[in-house]
Image 1: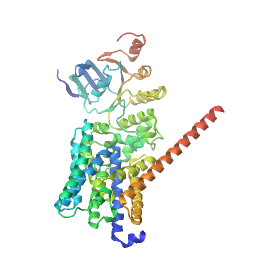
Image 2: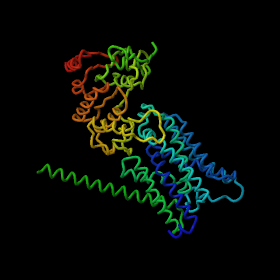
Image 3: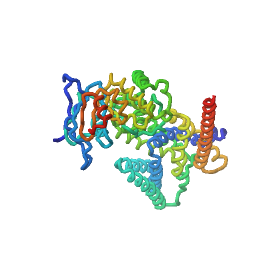
Image 4: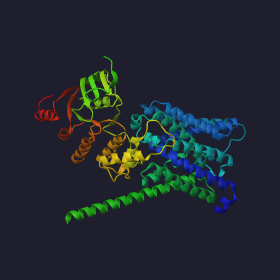
Length: 285
Length: 240
């Protein structure tokens, strides 16, 4: 594997893509989980497929089409009135299927052979080009810059919007920043794990970090680290077993998450039993 | 009469933070508050007691400017900043936040300064507020690991760390056991030397001992010479 990384450009690109995707995961995963926008993120990821198809049809880089559709879908959801939760959910569902339908339609209308869309649906980190690395580097810089620039007011907005409003923080601006960061971040993840599996990489590393840390900074940092470990492990499995990388990354991260969650639960139960036992022993004496 | 909100002149002889005159507020056909008038003197603790649906929460929200009256006038002292602590928190306690992070949020400036970090003075303010509510030593603890009473205290510390002059609390002792409620009210009693406190409460026995002013709220307001007088009337079962 190390030899392959040293010798092959596609392996080096895969490693860069994994690193950038991990940085993005830590940030937008935390934002989406804490603001309860995971379902919306799924809708945005699937809506982006329409733009990817449009890119194929009109002959421009599909990632730009995907970004355009993802940002437009996010903006549409953000514009919905806040008190109508049902409408937002419905809109997510509509955009989810409409984006996919448009993507398939555009690809079917494109001249020549139908391209293999598996890499966009399930991810193919091993096929990431040097040009694509530049794109996702730009997107990652935008996400990191927005997050670092507005860190404290953004955390307050994510945690307690009512108090943020009462403090006079511009919550409208915070909302737009969140609804811009998420689609940009999703486009980075699409190539690594694919549209269908994006949500897994957004949620699992953050959920693991949340098991152990109680500050946003640590959760973001460690979910970046976990995401990178999962991506490299998945990448290695994909390389040796010749199976889709996105699938490997998601399976590895899910298995690790379940193991950690159950072992933590068992440890907590044991501690609880021990403390109950020692308390009852004390009361007897 | 249309609702008018304007500022009191600071040169007034008696320093009053908020003056409410003939306030009315209705939810459709049902009026929660009708012809209510009272004032909140600076650095005092006022308790609003009364039956459920009597309009206590509505008044608390009007005092903090979150709700505007349908009729009457609310006059705020010039430069007055209010903080509101609701009965139930809208946030998720599973959020990865330590007590110190939570309290520091109260020190955030209104204008967003890009790439800003908390200054030493903001941290000092937060530490002072944490100590004031008796949570010293809990700074690094996650908010999800706090008891109900500790979480309420941490939220009070967040408001205390901000530059508000008046703190309005809606049923701060709700859901707390007797000891935790007592402790919380003691903290509020100590705070009144620096901030004006107004709270709606059901916990009659404890609040009367710390209140400077007690108002009975049942759509309209009944004022009493002292909190003790209202307490005695309520104990005597006198219909109010």
